[in-house]
Length: 234
Image (tube, rainbow, N blue to C red):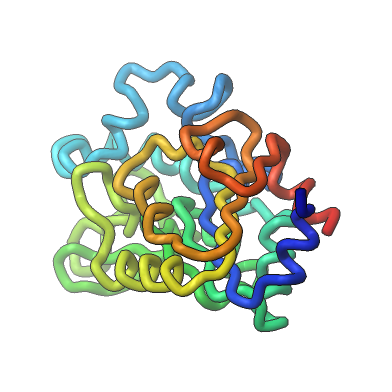
């Protein structure tokens, strides 16, 4: 069986599809593991608090949770983020497709990143359209508001709202062009994001994830390890 290094050396158009497990080595908790965000105790489930309905009906409570758990702005890119940025500079990586909203891929230097669930770094006034930084949101208290009085909404895709068409189309196109797809740090249980793997028709399908996933049996190589550790050793 070929090694990951050999597959990467042979490939010319790699796409990386990542989830929360890519950022855990940067100190950002994931959602669904034993110690993940969805296992923590709140009066309302985190999944409900991250819904669009909850944002509009309980805006202050949304912001309390959002500042507490969704804005780890001190986090730095880990070895996985840095390796992917390096591959892009070298012309080996077509794109990163991510379910994460932390912006660490861009912080590491990646340019072509499709953020399926949005980003904490984009925040828009619902009244006048003015843009605000994540740092502005983090510094605030209560409901974040614009100078015009409008409520500011973070550009994170809440569960009943689909990802923007341009993001989805770009991700699908990149995956369809790839000769190697590395799926990493994701349980592949969240749809429609998990279904993006079906658009891959290239040569090497690789999975890097701490736990087993529904994709394991379809892959050319499966590594049940931490993503940063694997990519950092290449």
